[in-house]
Amino acid sequence: MRNDGNLDDPFGSGRPADRSDDTPSTNRLATLRGLVRRTRFWAPMNPRPGRTQLAVATGAACCLGLVGVSQAGFGAPDRAADPAPSAEVAERAAVDPASRAMARPSTALAIPSASASPSATASPKATAKPKPKKTVRQIVPVAGLDRTQMNNAKKIVQAGKEMGMPRRALVIAVATAMQESTLLNYASGVLPESQNYPHQAIGWDHDSVGLFQQRPSSGWGTVEQLMDPEYATKAFLSALAEIPGWQSLPLSVAAQAVQISAFPDAYAQHEWRAGEVVAEILG
Image (cartoon, rainbow, N blue to C red; front, top):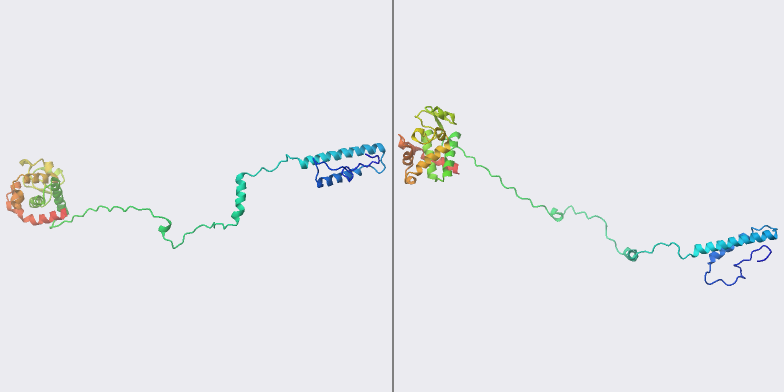
């Protein structure tokens, strides 16, 4: 170091060859030279020898500190760096440039054509066919009967069917009731009790009651039982079934064998009408 107050330039042309182990870059050298030049002007124009040496020493120390900081800042091998990309990111980066050159699929939503049939877009659910409602056939009065008489004839036919009696027996029963009561459920003026049950007329032929004018005193049943059209019909048909060969007998003969009437031939006149009524009811 010279005593003229000037710090020797360690980076000048006369400096020994740079070290091979830690060579600063050109930019760092330029920076350090600028700092050194600035440091030279810190000394006064007419310095004192002692003070000049102190200032020069202080400036040199500062420069050396800056050099160390510069080397630590720019050349540190453990500088925080961005994490290395993973293998998946590297693979995506390699594929992405190639995919950009390919034609990208359209992102527009597929709108079905208005002319497309509904079956092409969605299959309709199978709908079960509703079962047809069972309709009850309306039975109309025939053979000159009114609604009340037709309803009584229907009760006779239904009772005979429950017993399993054939059609011929049903016709005989209806014809007998036509003759005995004109198909009306009679109560008796002689038996006031009979009037306590549903009835449609009142008769005075002894104690005869009901559709078949059956007498409780003859053992056909109680007054209550004989006023019931179903019971009265089944009592008549049960007696008819006990007559041998009743199926082949004329209607009037078969009916008289059951009823023991004072007018045995009167039943035959109702046969055709009874047949028409039974046919309407059975359908």
